[in-house]
Length: 396
Image (tube, rainbow, N blue to C red; front, side, top):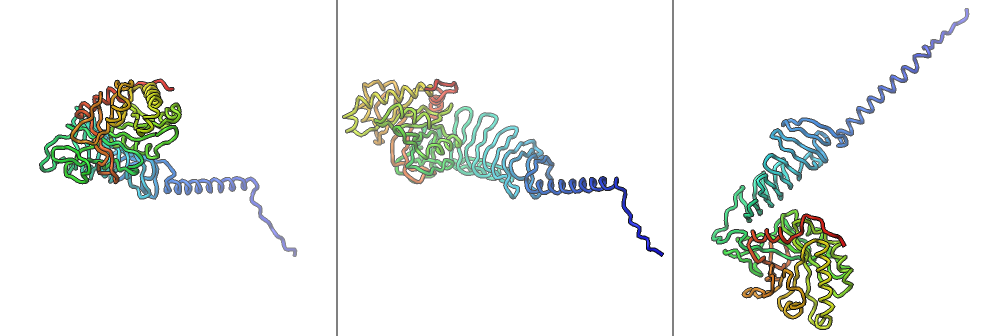
């Protein structure tokens, strides 16, 4: 009897269906696994409610917010920033009903240095702890009142024996590459009990704020201060009205004009540009006419470009020897004179550089100290009337 072998073959039509099913199942599994991995490693944008009721929209990594995101708290505050690998937001923007805060954060509260703009026009630039002003800080009201010093738990106690109000005197600094690394957040000047800042005073419980800063931008036809960009940005971030200056040389004046304009982006609210004229006496005696011509060309070009009349910086003796009677008397002057008993005698004196041996918190080297010829209300008026305007100007 023959052995019969029977071979069973499934119907041909079932094989494609089975293959398709397996492919689909594999695709779903792969997609799910891929999505999970991407989600857990911070590559998928999600919107989800947190355990505390806050709504988070952003990226998620290993069970925590990660990267750029937005959080809406149960109190209605909107918090924007970039979360770190541990799910912490160390700095960002907090927008609440009564204020907008920008700066360092801890547990979503201001901690460290930050800037707070209140809806009533008040501004605070300074340090915080657990959401309360604490440490060095400056507060400006919409009315032009100002407070400055070491805050404690939201209050500013005056130093014992203090006999002055902040804003009665307006002090500033002018800086260059010599003050290479400035901590703009900790800038403070040391005064006596009457509020007067003196040269060579390295420490005092009586503090005055830096209320303006002039920063060296360029010199001659091709030199650019490598500290300018950072200092210029930091001054504005820390709420300090800023200006920029150019050191005149007897090189190609058109190139000098271009050098300053190309590297000095003055913005509305900035102080006027400053021309520093202090060529040595031998050069001025020999090339006086050329120096005067170059100075006028630079000043005219700046006024045309920025839309404001520049300021002239020099020494008072230098003014009397070389500039007086040569068409400069309509300009505002920024004068260096280091005799504390006698103010400079020049027309339109607006700023007096009274020492080159000053000290300031936040600056490790000596620094030039300046004083404006009026109180803080008058200074604000000066910036509003003579600073860089909002309207566009003609470019050259």
